[in-house]
Image 1 (cartoon, helix red, strand yellow):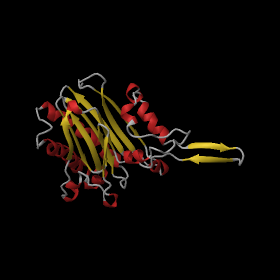
Image 2 (image 1 turned 120 degrees about the vertical axis):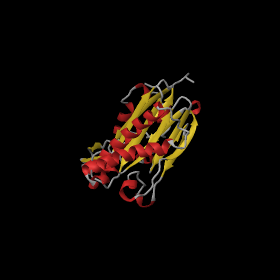
Image 3 (image 1 turned 180 degrees about the horizontal axis):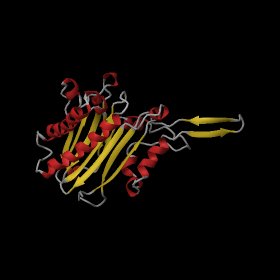
Image 4 (image 1 turned 45 degrees about the vertical axis):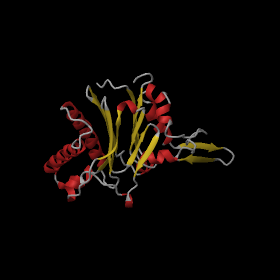
Length: 267
């Protein structure tokens, strides 16, 4: 495992609209670490495809593993070939699956990517499509794209469109204190800062709570529970009118995030 001085919290929640129509959570996340570094990836499958969670899961895992293999082979994240190589690693897997399963499965392999590769010396943040990332408290939304149609890596195999893994930040790891990677559902979460939770009077609060509050790193299930509470329908009884009042969950889209925070007192 990585000896890097970071604690990690990660969670994913099914969006309200997908729950309403009986769809699966089409987001995925993957975190992998070795003596060479740490890789975190979140992916979001295309909402118009019935099984795009398959591509999201495969893509996240392939990217994370491929990045660690490249680090083990001595590649550096600041080399201009690093991200193009990762992209080819993913496309090779998808191409093999297309050959085995048929071209019609390619629609299930459409997913966006937000990821980071953290080594002892450098940290690289990259993306393809929409999502959110935040570094040391500065939040960077990616998208939305025209027609709510972000570019997908698999377009290269479907109609030759060259969608790249785009570098978003390359900084010394010693300067990284907090890093968040999120699918586009996190953009909805950010806008809810002054909204009350479905049950009770507590405000949702700013995204910064996710890397400043110790509970999310002390309890590995705390972040998942927080997202679940945000998206749990609340039912209250109004005894005077003899009616039930329902407050829906707050997150319409699947929401997935990974948060890294430097351990206190560690350089």
